[in-house]
Length: 339
Image 1: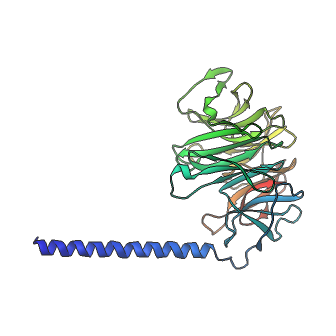
Image 2: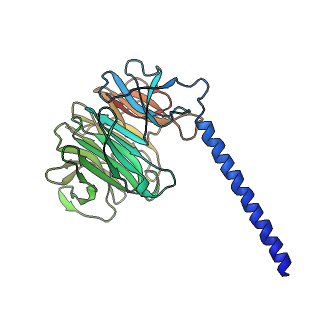
Image 3: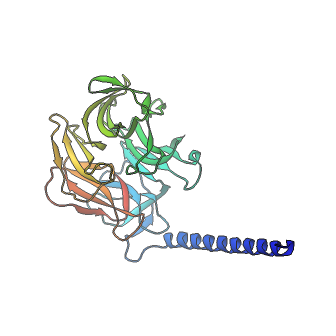
């Protein structure tokens, strides 16, 4: 190939790459514009004041397409399909209790240091910010508001992946003491001390005493419900095949997702009696990949993918005793927190 011909080939390649880059940029811009346009027939969303002490409200992350996408919003608990008020605070995961909120934020495609956890006061002001080691996954606040927890993926991007790694932190909002990794705690598996390089924790839920918590331990291809002690820095296994536990307000039961086919990302939602370890399957028959939220002592809420809409979820509710049928609670929403 002559030098002139080589130069022409190079010039054509540069032009083709430039054209492809322009197409990709325009397509991304168009996609972003579509997200910012309110969906016809979608829920009414308006900017307004949202606080974490608004009794009788449910806070959640707005998933309805438009300018308030991913913003923390609220609706009346008695009329959850009513027009929603958006706060302007954007999160990927959220939870709140007793006037304390935790908002996990993520910058898509950016380095891990761009992911952070914000601890919010009752007016959504940021009290502290903490860098996250990976992609936000789960968030919880204790009933008193004194403790917050979050889980991130540091390897893999879902609990259905063949290989994934998590990191779970617990924060005391009174002293700002941070336990950055639950893997530092002593594990008691079947009553004996246990250590393994593949041990992962996720999905913390707190008891009312600001001392006891529950979470999932994954190790050796199995998952366990663990009860943890902050004072003793120990976790003790209680039973197997429990993921993303959520403690009931009365502290007697744990809602959780149970893997129904080993090696597959298929789960059913159950409620476990902590005294008897009896499991009750709930009426929801779809696979639920979420940490359910107790709206009260008898009702659970959880997210399911919106039918026909990629990347969107709806909130559903179901009785905790296994009766009745699931009901659509809030369309285009995730991360519910009853205030």
